[in-house]
Image (cartoon, rainbow, N blue to C red; front, side, top):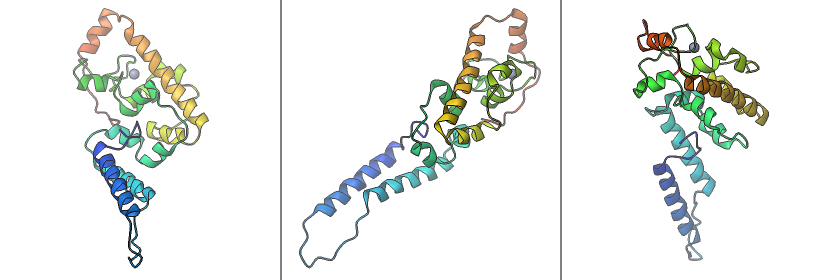
Length: 202
Ligand SMILES: [Zn+2]
């Protein structure tokens, strides 16, 4: 929901309820000697939603990779540019063409990257920043971890477009490679990796 910029439904329901009742009370006729009552402004109610959403985001049990990429909700939802593409969404969720994820949902037999011989877990970080198979597509990508790149994307539309395009170049090539038939020997090797390394990214 953070990626889409939409607060959780229970916070939205609470906000709508508060906006509705505040409006009713604000518009209600009052006697001339009635004390001037202070009502929350609509913006204050919306601000409270954001604060509660941020608190829930920090303590949520799910979406922890996305949280590393987008620790603070406000700059993400306040941005005036930056279309969230299919490939950028994959990079920010880790849910996509990454063997660590595919292994977790039992779609593949191993977490290890099948595009290089480094015997490393195939995570977003490995694919976008490390895997030598995508060195060419990676050229021109600013330095930094994935969370640092996301922070960089939020600085300007140009930075957003540049980094988003690089994510797309790398992930498109990876999809293309994955769709190609693999030699039998390599396929057998991938099915039985000798070691598994823990991932630090998801
Ligand atoms: Zn690799």
